[in-house]
Image (cartoon, rainbow, N blue to C red; front, side, top):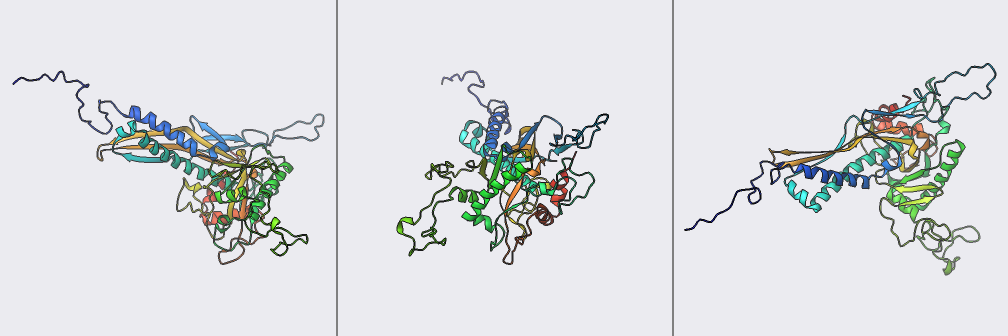
Length: 445
């Protein structure tokens, strides 16, 4: 019997079994392919799902642990400089003593997963892209929650040298800009007399509340101008429910809602059929208001926005209303606040500008992978080192609803005219995490 020649044993016609999950079929390390592919797709997903990081003051660090932002409006002034009078430096005119220091968080956030077949992920885009999407979205959602909370907290802080719980001056080292509590916009009450538990007002937002929010935007611009604050990039972030109500303002919801000549709501006996359901929608792109887009367009993506008098209205499902971050943590201790206590007002949204919040990143995203020979799997981690600070809280205003009826009453309607009261409520419910976190960090470096 003839023996057939098999030829030389080479890597071309013979593939030995992999020694471990980190060794490819040809003996090379698949991580050289896997890491660049997956990390790039994860970073793309993070950028796609992240909302707030693009509309705050963001700095990327290549090293170090902190960044200092100068306090604006601290240049000294001598209103009448007499001859022979020497100008001396003041505590409010030097960069070294007039800056806010923002630090990175102590520990990074990480998204991770485990797989038993890294080769399939390298060669199959459908598998790899889904893991990248989930990892990027998980990191983006967590970061968005942190920044959304920082925006809301900024709407509660008092000026430098003032007690956040009372708003009164407590230190000789007052705000170098000369700001007092009256220079900080108080929370705007856009919904009142709501019967029900916490967050009831937001989930049951009415057209009247939506109109109050638009009026709050107008009042915000007036307040900014009266205090010489910027008005270039103003955002109003609201919940998806509130956004939908604003978007649908003016679309008729019931019959016989026209007003008669005597000023009362008409009924079927006094309003003719031609007046039924007549109204003029605000945000449907009509010729009258030229805002929004046609009613046939859904605007149901979280990235959609509306423009009103120079303010961009955006939506986010990451606002802290009705959230308990002490139980469901989103980062280090300063982020872990309670917003769902019975005494906490309902948060419809917030008006802010990018200069109000500072965000830090260290070297972008880091991706690591390792073969676990004990489990015969490949373990992959994507991590981010971030930091958050409040630098101009005078540019933030909360939009709140209060409950003055029922056993779960929030605040009396006349008691929410200042930031300190809501600050105290959140701080007490959070076991002083607010005072020891963002409250303590808002100070001159």
